[in-house]
Every structure is written in structure tokens, then in C-alpha cells.
Length: 143
Picture 1 (tube, rainbow, N blue to C red):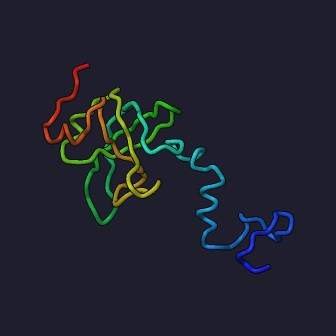
Picture 2: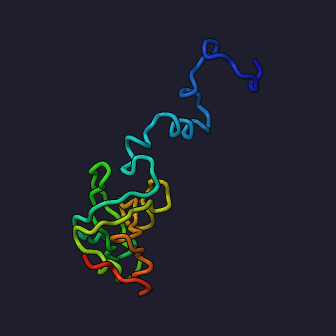
Picture 3: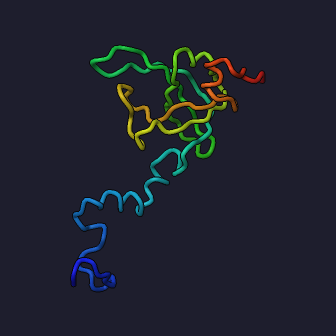
């Protein structure tokens, strides 16, 4: 049959997962359900977690820096991840056992730039945006 016509499954020679097409990767990503199994967020865009410790991660070559990150345990499933803390001095706003809101780092599950193995960033600390704390628009609530 011509390529455009739909065929019943019984007449197809190969299944859609075996077709060597450029769209195969996108099809697999959408239909195998790995975004729920493998992604720590379980398919959602943001996730809340509890800060376990503050860590410094060394930047990859040729850069030389210590990138400030936190290790957090997600509330919804208990998985532990490393999340980058953006901007100068923002690590001082974060204490251990704080509740943080974590988002992706902008590359759909890839590490970004020279920070190895870090796929997430911190957006809020105990309900207050990190940017608002940085610009001194708001204060962190006393707990």
C-alpha cells in the first residue's frame, strides 16, 4: 500500500517500535512510559523536596569552580537528587531540612554546562522564590 494509507495491525510487517525512522526516538519516549519510571519527577515539571545537605560540585574542564548545589530528597517518591542553586550567595538562604521547590534545568533531563550530573535547579525555598530573596524583595519566613 502507499505510505500514506493507514493499515490494520495484522497486515503490518513490522511494529512501530521496530521501524528505523527518525521519529522512532520520540515515539518510544512518548509510549514506553519511561518518563514515569526513570524520571525522578515522575513526569511532572516541578517537585518539592527536603534539603539533606549542601554540596559543592567541581566544574568540568577547562573551567575551574565549585558550583553550589544541594542534595534533596523528593517528597512524592523519596528519590534523592542533586539540584543547582543559581546566583551568587543564594546558598546562604538555604538551610538543611528546608522545603525547596525544584524544577528541571532546561535541557529535558540532561546536565547543563560544566556541572556534571546535575539535572535540576532550586526555584523556591520554604514557599518564597529564590529570586525574591536574592533581590531582597521578600524575607524567608521564620520557622
